[in-house]
Every structure is written in structure tokens, then in C-alpha cells.
Length: 331
Figure 1 (cartoon, rainbow, N blue to C red):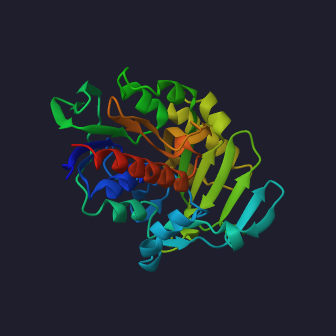
Figure 2 (cartoon, rainbow, N blue to C red; figure 1 turned 60 degrees about the horizontal axis):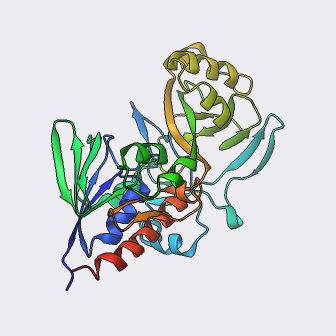
């Protein structure tokens, strides 16, 4: 009978959590996450009594495997459909936000609720940014601050492709696939409104050089009633202004937003900005996962397939299946 392997996973987003759960029956799994919580881009920020889903805005379910994996979450109302009107601006056309084959789901009562449910029972270290990987196949170590974690038989990078590329040692044979992968940045503006603007939509796609998306976060299920907006800049504008001071970005986005929604001086003053350096997938790797069975290193994530939450799950699930075939026959 094959022994249980020691598996280290870098990243506690949907991909990392999916892989950890898939491998739990044949591996001792430890996850290392640089942020304070789990979920990655399935993120929620709390300010006073208001919550902002400042990462992924929603997700869809197209694949039967993803649907089956979410049955319990749906039954427990950890995820729920997001209903209401989806507008296009500036023309003002309205359509159903959810319905038919395009139902949009969100975590409930916050976007990171799904990740928190998936993380239950797993060995996860948060506030643990991995700075370097050392060792050799079957004996890998992670440098985190002044400590060293390991050894691990296998290491999997479940982080954005550029971050994974920087950490993976030279002997990893798939650096070419990582190098061709491109991800876009995104700036997210969070605004608590002092008065409800009575907007006729729950969310809007915007044809604008600066603003690409507006959502009324309080229109999502189980959110506080206080009116609040989450505003995303376009991918191109975010990439072009990635290294600008955040205050300059915040000011420009607020000016652009007021072409569509009135923002009071007090609302503008209190608005917060977040920079996602790796938010969306522009050019995927074109394969479900990257695995090197000689070095015993691998990588997975939405960037392997497409920029969707579902893709992160499918990538990790596929890698889990491949890893199991390897480790279950190992001596």
C-alpha cells in the first residue's frame, strides 16, 4: 500500500482549496496563504457595517462536475443566485442579471463564504507569504519569513501564474507555459453611499475607457441594506496605470464614475481603492494544469483554462486526479 505523501500547496484560493480536498484521502496536506484569509480573488472587505465584494463579482456554473461539487453549498445557501437587472451603460439597456443558462451566483452572506466552507477542516497557514522554494524532488522546503517549512514530497503552486513562475525552481519543466500566460490587473473602487441613488440596476457593464463595471453590492443576497458600490476599472486602463499612486488612481476613477452616477464629496472622500495586480486571465496556459513528475512540482489555477471561478475548480480537480494516479502507485 502506498504511503501518504506530504503535499504542500501555495495559495488558498478556490484552486488550492479544491486540490487540498481532493488529495485529503491520500496525502497530508498543508496550505500556505500570504493573505489574512482564504479565498484569493473570492474576496470580501468589511468597513463598519458594510461589506464590499471587491474581488470576483459573481461566478457561473457551466460544467456538471462543478455543479455536483457545489450541491452542498447550494443546499446550505452558502451560494445563491444574484438576481436583478444587468445594465449596459451609457445606453441604459437593461437585461436580467440571472436566468436561463446565465445564472450568476455569489457567496452568501459574502463572496468569500464559499471558500470559508471549503477550508473547513484543512491545515491552512494564513499570513504566510512564501519567499522561496529550495530542496529537491521529494524533499522540498518553503522559506516563509525566518522559518523553513517542509520537507514536502510534492509542491503545488495554486497562485497566479506570474507569482508561480517566480517561485518555481528552474528544474520545473513547464516554465514555457507559465511564460506565455498573461494576466490583467484591476483597480477596484469601494464607495459607501450616504443616500441610495435608486439606480435601476443591480450591476452594469460600462463602455468607458476607465470604468468597466459597476455593482450595487447591497443588491446581492444576505448583504447589509446600506447602499454601497463596487466599481472596477477596465483591464487595459488598469494595466496602463498599474504603478501609479493609489490616490491618483482613486481620483481618476471617481471622476470617471460621475459620468454615470452622482457621487457626493463626502462619499468620494471616504471611498477606498484596491489594486489587484493579477485579476483576470488574458492568455491562458492552454492546458488544465502543469505537472512535472520528475521534479514533483505542479501548478494549477484559473489561468490554466480561463478567467472564471469554475476554471480554477476544474484545473485543480484535474490536477488532483492526475496526482492521485501517481502517488497511489508510489512505493
